[in-house]
Image (cartoon, rainbow, N blue to C red; front, top):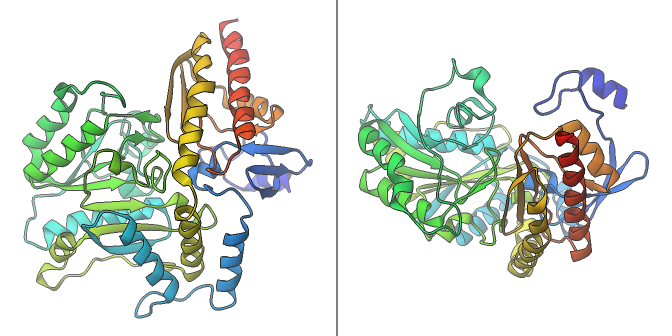
Length: 426
């Protein structure tokens, strides 16, 4: 099977003939992945930040099985169903009170596409043809579809190959005032100048709140986000917050924008929405935005085939119930405390530039790019699954991880990075 995979199946951001051996996973339970050879390794990535409850969760399994007995899918055009209605009720009850409408889609990237279309249609439906740009940020990442790529960092991002075909947007400097720093108004200067100069052409600002994820795992000051919200209001520009990676408790708040006590005009969620069981995302917005979109008898022009898939919605309902009824704040606080204590010593390693921690996020930024193939194999030898990229070694473990399991992860990070430091300096 693995030979067939190597010859025919494409994997994310990888050549068609992989330069590293793929690991064949035969089962998963709790925080462990079991490989084909029987070796069990702790997943420190929550399968790209989504599996917050761990794997093979009885409550989520039961929800999927119960829904399968009713219907796995039905089109959402002209029809509706209880799992979608219940999920919408829950999402609107736990997010900002100004968010009153919800659009379900099948991936985080598509939820961003929907958000961008909402913003453009909002202005276009009111006869404003000038607002055709999005103001985004360097180091930002919002997905791999064309619209989402157009608001990712155009220089250091993963999409430079498409630079010639993407919609041209405007980019401000990445937030430079980091979490815990004393606020300096100079940090907002570039954004403010670009917004002031171009606001007549800007439909919306898009930003990952508090943590810029795939663009570098950068954790910035809530005051920066607060000032972005204030300036968007001042210049009459919509604010889209991308909580696909940060939503549902990851940063220590249920949603990261709560750190700054701000309200988005449009909110994107995904990843952990179903506890990592199925692909599902949502774009939430205000009554003001929807009334603007529908001015002149228009409607939002988007409609995925698997929109509000009943099976995915049923699992999402079970996942949110499990999360909200759990001591998730205590769990995240404990993870943060342990990460702070145990990753701190990595600063003594010569190759480590900085250690950053917020909630259930731990980041080592190195002074050199990682050797992905070598490092991945070393982590597996240490009994853990981590997927470093560029100069970053980071973890986003499931919320249910035990203290000893998390220690295994942090110990592996220290040991592997220590060897790597000697390797690159040799």
